[in-house]
Image (cartoon, helix red, strand yellow):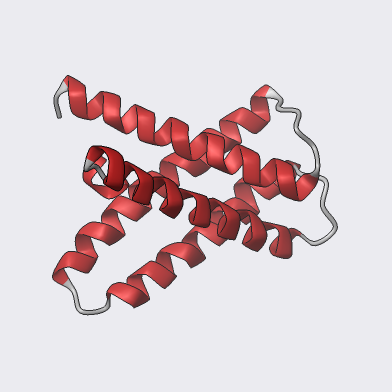
Length: 127
């Protein structure tokens, strides 16, 4: 991994971090961020970037690409529930984690389509 790939990886993690910060803030209606909250966001972002890249690489070789995409979403919901939602002030933790994950994944796919259209890059190809 050279310096350019490492820089693109860091940019991808920061984009994902901002997206999950926004989606968690929308769900909890709290736009403040403590250092613990930012660390939790960083962990969720790292897991998301590496899970998406792994699923993307496996789906090129397997016939179960839709099943792998669903599995990655389930993994993301569980990670968001036990890492990120613990700190948010919400009434239903599982519902909040599903909504945060859904908003996050939707925004990531929109950003990925925009990056593909403008710069001919996609998020999994960065990793």
